Length: 269
Image (cartoon, rainbow, N blue to C red; front, side, top):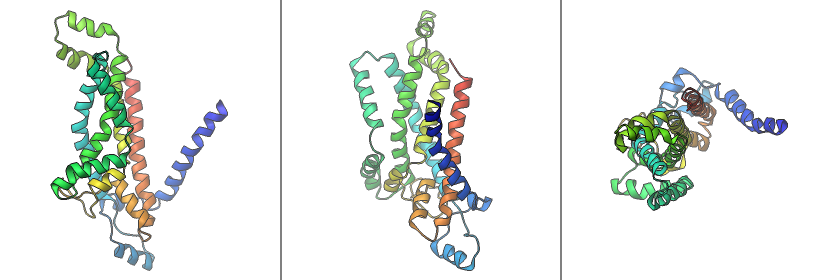
């Protein structure tokens, strides 16, 4: 068992080592705070033997904006839906909703990208950060619902009974007792949902499309770090920036996962 557990860590260490060794070469402040260079700029720099100018600031800004907007929309819906499924798990509606949540969680991301393209991109007559936000929010929703449901089910039934016995309504019991008591697990599940979707590329290809400069207008096409990684991979001139962009994305995901572990340990029931 020890040997198999050690073998399980080999792929992770290999991935981290490769990305870190290759990505640190171009990881500079300029890389984090400047927009993506054009193919011509990269070609001139490569020909002259200098470092490729620019970076992934447009991707970082776009990723953070779409994540924040998706979180604002998906987190409240996901938390209250999860509480409902836990509190009313024996009703027919809750069983159907729980089954649909599992189906949504297993839906391939490319299918969600196509659906949001039909729902948002075509009616708006253009790609936009709004469409990317909808796609990411739909992907987040089942993860938050399921983690919230499991967190609420872990609470002792005496919490609910005591609050109701003191005269509290069911809504106040949920808001002031149930959710605060399960906050650690809910917050952990939310962070894991964010870290799950932060690296999604295909839905953004169908919705946000990408942008070569820092874009703040959410009704316009917007870039993201995963989109830039895909663009760098397909452009031989910009491929030297591929590993550094991957390292930035990996660091963000690792920070989210470490934060979730810290919160989970601090807020244990």
